[in-house]
Structure formats: C-alpha cells, structure tokens
Image (cartoon, rainbow, N blue to C red; front, side, top):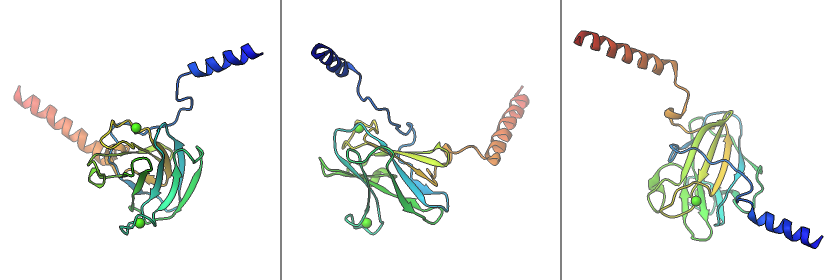
Length: 191
Ligand SMILES: [Ca+2]
Ligand SMILES: [Ca+2]
C-alpha cells in the first residue's frame, strides 16, 4: 500500500497544471467597457484564475474614493461559482471594476488604458459569452505579459458597448450589401 500511495503521489505531480480549466475572455476585447443592458439585477459570478498574486476585485463607486468601493471577490479566497448581486442600474451605465493586486499594491481597471498605472489595457470584456452574459478577465502584471489569466468573472444584464462584438444589425448588413453592389457596378463601368 505504501508503494501504491507513493506511485499515486508521483502520478499527481506529473499531471499538467492547472488542473481546473476556467474561461478567459477572447483576444480583441481588450479595453471594452462593461455597460448595463438590462433592467433586472446584475449578478456577478466568480469564474476562476491561475494567478500567483492575490487579487481583490471591486465595483468602483465613482466618487474618487477607493475605500468605499464594493468588494466582490478575491481570486484565491472566493469559490468558483460564488455570486454577488450588484443591484440594478440605469440602462447604458458603464460599470467600472478595479483589480487591487495585494502583492504589488497596483490597481487596474476595466475600460480605458489611461486608467491604469502602466497605460495599458488590463481587462478584456467579452459580450454574449453566454446568454445575456458578459465575461471579464484581468491581467495583474504591470506592463504585462498580457495573458489575462488572473481573475475571470461574468455578469448578467450587461454588454461590452462595442458594436463590433454584437450581431450585425439588418441596417448595417444592408449598407454592406449596397457597398458591394456599388463596387460591382463600378467594376462593370470600368470594363
Ligand atoms: Ca469609490
Ligand atoms: Ca497574467
């Protein structure tokens, strides 16, 4: 039995890390804002991380004061699947989230790169990751590298406010169609 348990211990060490998969928002979504798109309460769900640093996630109360921001999750302390009810907000409101890195003291924000101490994007915000749900993934290293693996969470009733990530609207498809047929006409005339 002792040999068996030793073998199992060796086998466990040989398994690839991380053992638990967790979602990371797709590339191309860096710097998108989190925008309220529904009238119901917004539920945040912690989705996991593979960071070495300890990171706290806050919802920013936009009054310039850090210590009244609303604590949501810690990447090492919160259980995957833990939820937090943020309440309701007016449609179109941008919700700003702050990642506080306990090891370095830096704070990083969703949205504009200019909000961050290194002037780089530190969050990806992916709309429609799931039905009516947005996925947000943070990077906790000052100046990168940027793999956005350090804290992921999702929200109901939000989108990324980025038209490029939404399903094309009939109007824009019509314009695209008109542009293509116009191009075809111009080609004909040139012949
Ligand atoms: Ca505040
Ligand atoms: Ca990282």
